[in-house]
Image (cartoon, rainbow, N blue to C red; front, side):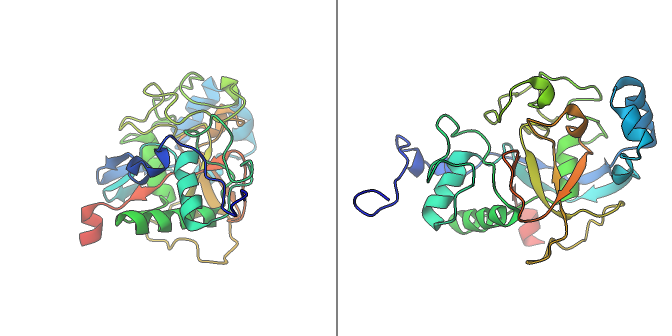
Length: 277
């Protein structure tokens, strides 16, 4: 607190009052069928072209992504970018929510306003969704695992958002050598999905609203219940993980109270069809 007993408010040059922080850019994903998971054909493809895939295949590490199966998604809109520090800061300021562990006191690190917020748990992300819903009148939530994968690979079962080959110039992974998070959209448009979503792989892992379960994915599964400590799926890889985890179908599971300097989230906004349905 400052000498007047108030929380120190970061100077934004009026950015704090900018309604754009409450109106995140979203991309509408049309309804339709898509492929989820890794096929045997894709395993063979990577086995011949990716030096790490032989070991993964031998150790059965692709099994968690199999079998590849076809699902139908209803239309929805999802954040073009990960939730940023400046967006999360407004939430913290106005709701008196706890700050992420990686912040310096009440503020995020200098120069990282437009970097993805990290150090947030699953429940922190849910609280942000509830807050922005109450502030805007739109319903915001986390994507489930199937929605996330549909966004990452588009309308075809691509291994990476841009195709079936890895390119370190298209995303922020260990192979890219950045050594930290990067501003959202830093790799656009080269690293974007076919529908224009940025940073779907690399930069930071992203929370989903799905338990880590064997495939095929249950599209009607309920989201995690409060207090349930089963592992929740995170997707996308991150800046200090290699390309092997920056695939559209790669999946990991962590506890809901887990936080990391490589884990953030993006949000889904309900469409009119969802509300009326």
